[in-house]
Length: 207
Length: 118
Image (cartoon, rainbow over all chains, first blue to last red; front, side, top):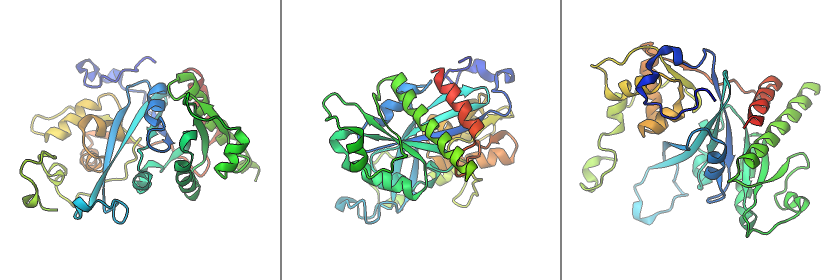
């Protein structure tokens, strides 16, 4: 990429000629999954910049959920997210957001999904149960998603049909395997999401 | 929460965030995490440091998420700062590609083409 450089404080960039072409726009995809499943690894594998972290402070998000007896008066919760970027072309920048482990919190941050193309649900077969809630919430919000099984070497391998049953997924939702450390593998998972979105768009057009 | 009750050694944010934003009632425009911000004016020495920092950062257009990351400020605080700069026409906010219930084929094809180059 011609201007792929995260060193945004570089004074040499002040020349307005270096601005992105007018009309460049952002678009995003969200990577969701339980704690330690490899979301940030995946973001880092495909991003052209080292993953950055943004956060949001949410008021009363933890009421009834964040039962920490030592902090009874805690009324705010900070939710942090790692993200990366891929310059698709001169007019389009794809941002990839990896959401943190406490799903109950980040689902309260509505902006995460607003305008997202779709989501990749990253699954660790050693802890499939943590994916249930994620998938239910994505379905509730009508966010299209594909399931990517992160192939940890020591994780049990199940046939796709078994995973589909275990996750109660409809036949149409793609399930792919992926190595979150590998750029090509993560790219393919994203491509499978895009392919799925194309299918949905085509079905919408004919409906 | 009032700061008087907190541990004096608690090194949290040294300045309450509402001081940085200019008050709790500042109306933030609707910014998305991936709204791109592009500087349209030189930083002014008299400006609030956070505003000047944004103008320096966004001489190369960056998303609101990136601005938040570089300034280590929460998203909602950054959007309040940005609202003021947009109002003063010092930065331009470029809305993300609108995504309906299902994204457009043309957009998807562009993304697919871009990803294949990775």
